[in-house]
Image (cartoon, rainbow over all chains, first blue to last red; front, side):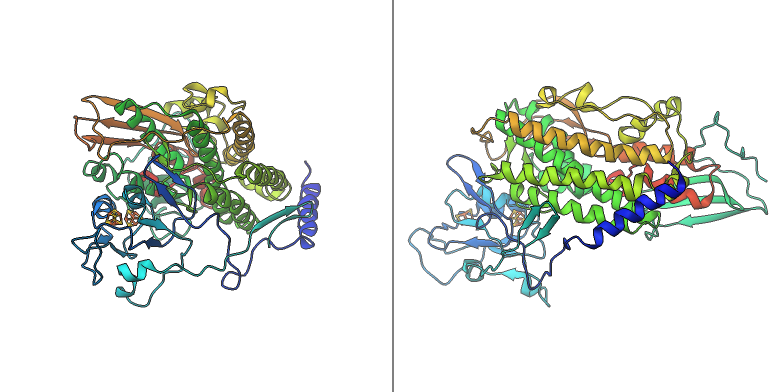
Length: 165
Length: 384
Ligand code: SF4
Ligand code: SF4
């Protein structure tokens, strides 16, 4: 290919793209949508359920304080500690529940795979930044809260190109 | 002038030898603070504009992955083993999972095999797009930085739907994959992969047919077929020098045998050919994904249930796969404990790095970025 025609071809391609829609989106105002409510695991069948691996959610009415999640994480990130909780549950005699340090967690979800009582799942919440290190440690009470998600942007493809909308 | 052979003598493969430096020769340190070097240093000796000696100095991001693996069991090894190449994390876990499955005697369900191939091919494209973006910016072509990074998002979105994470997926496990894909994933995947392929064709206009790129990369850093084999290079570097070697074809694993694709081979062996092979590979990856989606069983189990701390037999295995950079192998020695006794990762990046002194010596300094990044080299992976 000649030098001139090559350059003209490259310029042409650039001109064509002036009219196409922008692919990026404005992040804090718009947020990407994920499938489902987050990664879950079914201990009966031994298979996970697809979903985003974000901040965990802990169901206090199911957690027995068996510590299996904390043992699973021991070799990975040592992110899970098992502090005492105030509440009293019949199924949780020791009254201990997981507390997760998001300064250490790598969001692998293997603790979810380890929980045999459907008590620990993950959610779509990924905005966990904090000004202090202590702010990254989520107590059992904080982990119980269902996150508010307003994620609605998806990739859309038509003849003119792809965009987020 | 030193004793260095100059201009380039094809017969001699320079290694890390020490040589006399006189008044004409100046030593330059490229890196280790990433001025287009990655997390590594290249010690270059220049005579005016020409490079007379190259000494790559990797090791700045060594993490001790192999040693760490000896203290973790076969499952908890997964999250840290994918760290060396987070952009290609499925492909670095692939040989590990194949090896552990052989150790534990697991039979992977059919649907899981297809899901693995799809995830691995999507991941290969994600890696190559990222690599291409950096190659573009190395050469001062900022459009070629923006486009691959943008188009990569199409595939990251698919992987995100599939695995639940954008880069470090932790999706492969010994015995299958972590979870099945969400409903109507097939349609979304097909649509986005088809669009991605359409976009790939446009790269030719701005990049691969661009005379400026061609003038900078054609006939620079030529690696002959013989040298490519002698130096033990792999992957795109080897295939750009005219050797048709792809593990997916030569030692097919999982379901690659049943899928329809070709390997891309070019004869030239220069930086241009090396930069083009990964791009051609992406077309094949799109083909594989479409083919796998068609042939995949529509339902079925995707994961074998494992005991919490599975123990391997007293034996050793070696398995390798074709990653985004080339042959990636894992040698696992088991002594009947839940942890591997020894895990050796044979990475393609390190093997392609060996070609660097050979290619750079005799080149102009200005051609250094074009040659260096065309080696499809990922510093973090080389250091492990
Ligand atoms: S997601 Fe992984 S790193 Fe995070 S707490 Fe669970 S096991 Fe530990
Ligand atoms: S979350 Fe699950 S694994 Fe962890 S202590 Fe509670 S019941 Fe046990």
